[in-house]
Length: 74
Image 1: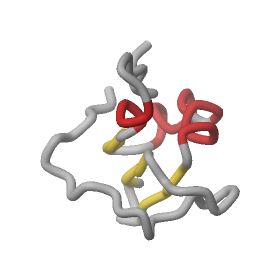
Image 2 (image 1 turned 90 degrees about the vertical axis):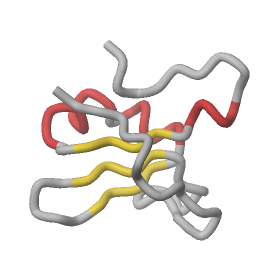
Image 3 (image 1 turned 90 degrees about the horizontal axis):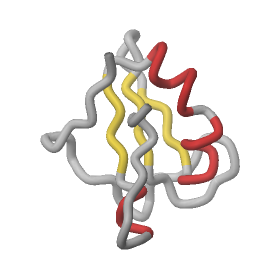
Image 4 (image 1 turned 135 degrees about the vertical axis):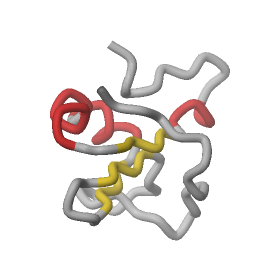
């Protein structure tokens, strides 16, 4: 089960999506200690797999709209 953490440091404008280089709004903490960064689009695209493998997901996609739809909700 994945958790969205409120204690992780916020993502900065300098954090970039590992797939396309856009501003990252999702950080997935991997078991080996590394982080993967995704824009909202790629975060949604890879959400199912991230929930399976990441130990934590920090999702700031709610900042894009008034009705957030975090990637970790089923």
